[in-house]
Image (cartoon, rainbow, N blue to C red; front, side, top):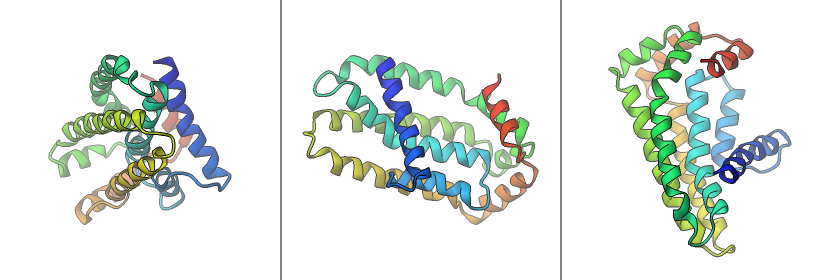
Length: 195
């Protein structure tokens, strides 16, 4: 699992380095990074765009690189345990977000408090997609992996679009929430990192 953590983290760091150096990077990471250059999305949107790229693309690749061939099932129990731990963290993350975005309750109201269930489902479903992708990638020959990774990148990029540009009702709520959200990046990071 330590090796998986390192490979997984390095996929994000490599994407960020490539983006800043204007080298090619995956389309889903480019969508996440480009979003920050436009009218600032909510911190929640930043988090969701990053989670989308990192889970729906990077996680499956990292798991397959960690345990290639038929050795992948050796980490399945730990992989699934992490799913449960992450689901338990959703309420805490939402409380932290509310500290920097005091009108986050408006999204709860518009979403009729379905956001917690949706986040939990998306996290669980995304990690399940990542596990299935890892199973496919782990057994593919090196010459066939790039095409599968490109397919996964396309799916993750498609999932980024509604996060960036939701429908008109949600977009209106996002603008109201954004008007009250902190612009202090250091404060945002500190609040998200501190229990």
